[in-house]
Length: 416
Image (cartoon, rainbow, N blue to C red; front, top):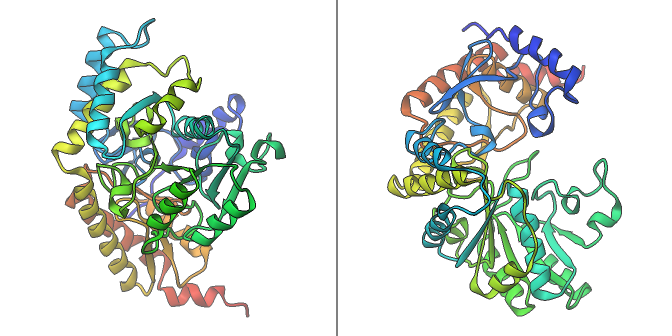
């Protein structure tokens, strides 16, 4: 296979750097490679095309928002209909009420919902609600857990100060005793515990909850009046449509949704129990664009479609096929591919070679039309087809062939 030419992307990137810090900022900037795509021209279903007109099967799904396929007709139709009627107006739209009712009916642990734009809005609002409800200061999070870019979650990055996160306590994943220790060290001052439903850090294997972990965490939170917050921004609707917590047998007080909730339209939600409804009403957290009606219409259409097609189980099936196929192709070249996390959000790592070889393999896949990253969990959507998977396996096979057998890569990595 011939690797893609990305000269138009590279030229545009040079232009961008003159007027945009870094050319492409934020998390999109992390994926920039000299020989990789940088800007898209169009998208459809499970694929996008870059500005050089190269076609890619997309396993990042816009970092999660795309769940039904790009340009899904039912979602786009609902958004366009509402857009023509009005989007940002001096009053809220009835679609906000309809969306809240749909979400509450669908997600078993919640009784109300508030809407915003990004997942980080939801987590920040959750922190405020927990503090308002308890009158306490401190929050406990899992180490390396990502809950947005608000200063209280940045922990020492550029532009932050120690005071921003001084009331945030970090504990290891799957460590119930660590939460108990934090409670003992800060009696009566922990407002909330926030975690994703399973551990999906950016730079290492993902890890599911140990047996009984969430039940023990819930018991500790209930005993000590700590608000239990699930950040379901990334995994939401890909594990269980009723809430990822349902798959793991526990009931949170607050759930943060984002990414896939509107199939790419800008929307996020914080949903919670009746016990926290007054606290949520008391907190002031708003934004000019929080009441956009078109994204809400898109979200309601997305949720209805997800239920109609049993989307979480569909994506689990697709993810299992993808994982098995990739592992088998890797093994045929002597590589040990590890797929961790849940099937609909797999994290990939070549276990028997160094990280440089892993990155080289990813680059070879991207250069032939399979869009993967070397450092982040991936996503499947209901739009990924068996034909997509078969084409993926062919490209991945060619990428491994180009690298050569694993034994050769291992030999290169051994100092002479």
